[in-house]
Length: 80
Length: 202
Image (cartoon, rainbow over all chains, first blue to last red; front, side):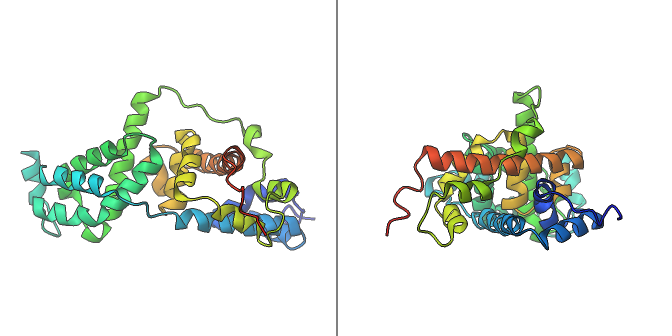
């Protein structure tokens, strides 16, 4: 059995999930994670939740700029 | 004098004060948003300092279309320099402290929304913008900044390493710990503030 054929435990797979979603794992690790996911339902759930959490963070992007703060910043730029 | 020398090197765009004003105006909201996630207090001051430095360096902007990223990069540089002045040493979290926790599994085990068919999604949507900000602000700055830049503002890990002047490996490790810590703090915040109370009524 080669190193990439070895089944990794859940703890190791979960640790790599976000990097896996970021395409920031080596091809060997990608293979290990995918192999683990192919039989582990819990880690598939972890993967789906990681995707949801990432989408949630990305969607929280636009914070209101209060009118008074905008006015002060515009005045600041005007006075540069 | 340095400004005049810089302006002779311009390759694109109008570099007048009016042009600067036009360029930054649509970016103010994004800059303020980023600043509010990086610091608890003084977001407006942080934006002002970034605008001042950006104005001084306006001549170095090569592509007007990249103004948003350019301004955010300057803001992060100001944040980083402030952080260095305030904190002499950086305290990394022990790995074992963050490694064991899984928000996904905790939600299944505790089942705080027993009537929900979409437990994990419903847990996330219970968090409003201010709640997310509060959770972020509970994280030490060294973990908060990479997390915000990567997953909320969409910077690449390499860019973040450059902006925060830290080795790539350090940023990768801080992202890992920051994500874990963020999940832990989301759960703690939801419990402490009874965020989920009344969200499961049938």
